[in-house]
Length: 330
Image 1 (cartoon, rainbow, N blue to C red):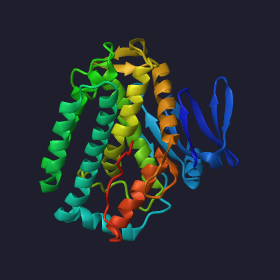
Image 2: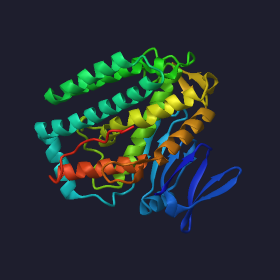
Image 3: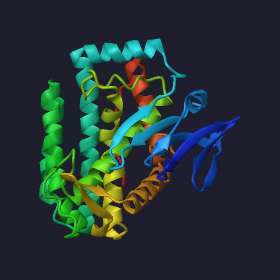
Image 4: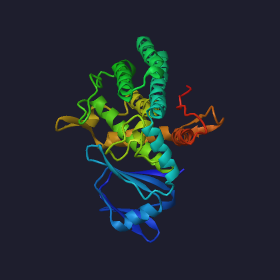
């Protein structure tokens, strides 16, 4: 599997003959182009047309993040696996309310059931989460009866509200109280971690969609409108609890990231570079972690599981197999 390159320094990404290098004041660092799948740029990284042409040729996606760690945008190379047939199938399932609901319900069901798995895991470790588990179970039981997207998203929001309210019981870290979910900007340190992790998850999902025949512009839970991408938002819902949130609980539990790793910026709170690097290191390790996949009977990485989810969706769209979301088995 190709690597993700994370760049925190300021400099220029350039092409030299048939290779890439990153040039800073300190020197040049060459990148093994055949091994690079995506680049996440957190520093002030400049590029030129020659680089973009080469990145497109080599199918390398470049994601940009602001100085504050917020997702800014993506250089999405010319699609090499695009399929008119699949785009039509995605559009057909989006335009038909019943077909769209069937897929959207599975995304919410997957997210909710993975939230339940996370809560069960921590209920066994720290206790005190049974009431929230029961509430989420009751929400899950209602999902099949919902036939309206807005109502479905409202239920998904309620599930997450109840889930977030027990973060303090899980983290047991008084320096990182949850308080309430705040975004753009996040107003406390825990919300900053959640927003940063979610942004990374959206870009990872987008990179995996690029490797399939699916079009990231047509989602099912999130409305396909004038936004550039929506399918990656749908897909990320399933994996945020078991990947992003688990990394948050881990770095806080091990005190790898502390309150001193944050600073105020305008009306919000941002992470310092050290915290970003630690979080990304742990997230990358999580994506490479393998678990035995029930369906295919062999160990696969979480990153691979994200791709497999997209293949299942493709089969659903062409009528081969009804889509069911991945649910963690631990």
